[in-house]
Image 1 (tube, rainbow, N blue to C red):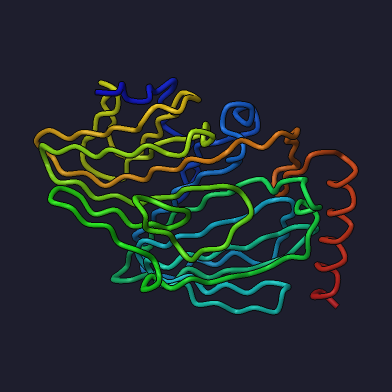
Image 2: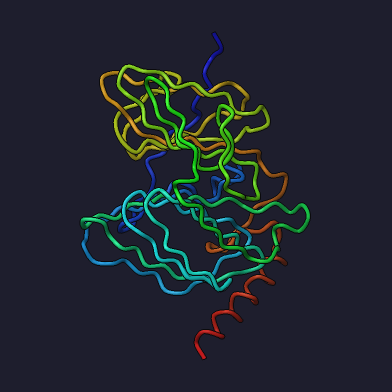
Length: 276
């Protein structure tokens, strides 16, 4: 039997208000191409709004678990992102957007993942794109002990229709108690992590509790997750690292300062156009 991919670090995240963040600039060397993972939770019955602001050089993947996100952006798209849907905003050379999170039975919860955009074929500075993929289009793979929802990429011959720029696999898994989940990503998918939403899970003899991120070692070994007396829900994310520098000014990530400067000018222009 192959040895499970080991965890090199377990993170508890930094909570600020309703959002807990797990990836920051100092982590980019080990998380590349992942530059943000945030878990938003709120039980306040009112809407939560974020006014227009800008991003560039990243692909923002939004996955509401409870509630609906109303999304507007400068690509002239307006999407209602329902629980279980996947929304991808490719910011490229610069985009601005605003969103309102509508609760469901006083609860709002969502996951957001950012990946840096590759420099190849000028994807880092591409025209922005906004795409919505309803949950009905996302494959569900069921066996006796688990259900795996394929959000992005492929899992056991099941492929998500989501179109993104990084070579990425993003899975949402629910496991029963006293069970085992096994997956071997393609060998070049060396960056990866597990994030536990609920229950108790074990990865390579490391115990994970809710709201913990475990970073996998950069090997091609399989990922093996087990449970004992509790069921669990967790996310597995893995990707091919980008061969480029990653620098940030918080809202954007680029491979060089010149692209950050160009994109800031684009975002400033977009913001000024809505303030006239």
